[in-house]
Image (tube, rainbow, N blue to C red; front, side, top):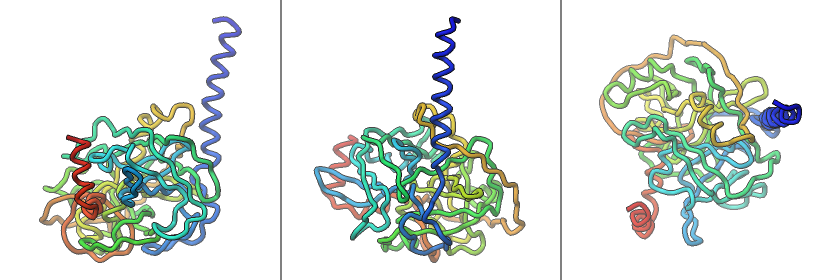
Length: 341
């Protein structure tokens, strides 16, 4: 290798490292964050990486149907099932948004150039329910718009780890009420063995999933409309995304925790698309295991995607994004059938 070529290689390596370090300088920091209370309205700037994904066609906005998180200036992380029926080119991503109606003075939006569902995702088993959306143009960071840090490979979120889920999903399982203001709720991680026991005979819980909820208590969970949004834990001053809202059995049911895609399993896959503009990957490690994290097995079937708020547990479940789609008019349903037939 010549001296010049060695310098070129070294320069490429340094640029790659610098890009990663720059992202770590900004990710997971919420300068306007104060005390977080579960199941209540959020305030502007508290969750600056939160994305509201709207379906849009021929200039008509059909509203929020899934959540996501900004992971760098060009990419959003969400759930694959959100794009099982709708291509990302028919979506608009809103950043810095607090309310679904009225004024959002710190907001900006972008269209999507493409979505990339994980290649091993299938709607039948819901494993690998994770997707990347590339923006049509970069966003500019501010106090109200920042990227989240992502859990690095090898991260451990033990049972009982305090976690927060955010979104605009339903306030009650089986209900139709959708909040106007971004909701936030704190719930503990449920270890995978207890989660698998709860879903025995209903759904296979894999190592690519992470669960959270108040087992044997209920009342707090994500719900329909929260799909694709984040579950996060705090390490020092940094917020780290541990999960992507995927499915559940009802919402806030004391027998069934919510199920999330485990972000730390996908570091290499995410890096393969984001290139030198790497998201900030941060290792989180806690092996706390609370004896209260036990479950009981039960009946019923189906799946739900998730939304955040304090809720009362009722009814059965399905994708936490799909029930929102049922609110769309028949012309839109016909349009979706045309697109994907």
